[in-house]
Image 1 (cartoon, one colour):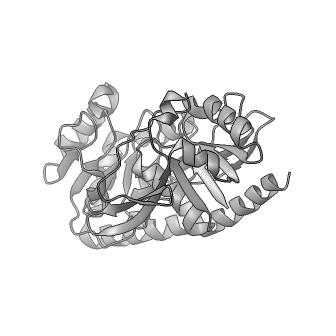
Image 2 (spheres, rainbow, N blue to C red):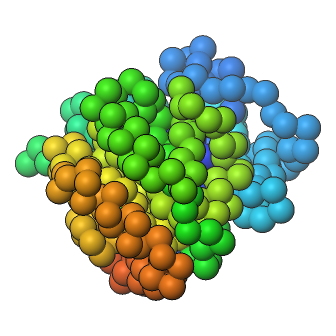
Image 3 (tube, rainbow, N blue to C red):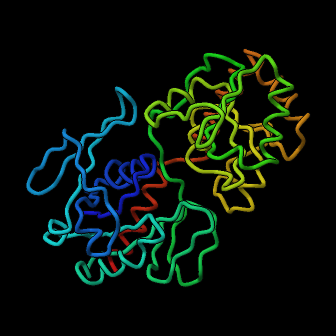
Amino acid sequence: MNVFVDFTQNNDHYYSLHLLFEKRLGLNLFRPTGPEWQTKGFQYVDSAMPSDAELIEGIYHIPMRMEPERGYYTQKAITLAKFLKMDFDFTVTIYAAHEEPFYNLTKTYKPHAVFIRQIANMHEIPAGFCKNVLLGTSEPMPPDINYISYFPEHYEGYCYTQPPNHNTVNNFVHDLPFYPYDLAEWNKCESALPDFTFKMHGHHGRDDEIPHSLMPQTMKNSAFIWNVKAHGGGGFVLRQALACGRPCIVRKRYAVVNNSSEKNLLEDSVNCIDLDFGTERAIDMIKTWSQPERHIEVCKAIAEKFKKDVNFAEQAEQIKEWLNNLSAR
């Protein structure tokens, strides 16, 4: 069975679809390439192919990796002309602006394919063209939407390793300096913990942004992850941190008000330190949890809790049944 999905240059996002459709469900996943996708009004695609891409029977096989020497997989990219010659069981859009173009693409050229919208961004709902949704948030869906909720799976390299230090706090949230209230909390914690190293990565951060391929190791080199994210509250970074077993410093109400599914994963004093209960309390907890033996104990427990809370294999089986029901309509 073949699945066609649009492309947004988000490595974590695309890899999660690779894990679901190809690794878990055994389907063939394809993405667009070539200028015709844009000139025909379906989506913008960077048509440049890397030098190591191999063209086989009209399909570009692009070798990819999630880390410098690990996480190898292959993206399969096709031109619009090749798409028209192939059979597809599902078409999937992951970007709100592509819902109408992909609806028209499916209706016009692949009317037997099931059209699906994957939603993982806060406050998004279908625009009225797609009735089937893979829902990666807790956003309420209109009553006519057939949806299944799930946590998008992340790269396997985000996994527990014993923390190599106990006093490094890394932030990967973008644009933290643009949120004065949260920046003030960061500054208070940093000032109160002079023996700790605070690194503000992410767009417009104080420190260098971490290349995507170095994120797994950088996260595992962290003692704590600062994920106070006013513009969401959850997302890949938070789930990846929990999978690595790293305590997260958060403001849980951001996840609640933004309908982030991660609100159901966060448990204060268990896998996170919630600033909503006070900055001084958070500072004291960081000090307590950073004691070496205690820190290792907490990290192990967080990783084990994540495995219990999020079972990607079980999710995939539920999605498989959901997809089979869609195909049978």
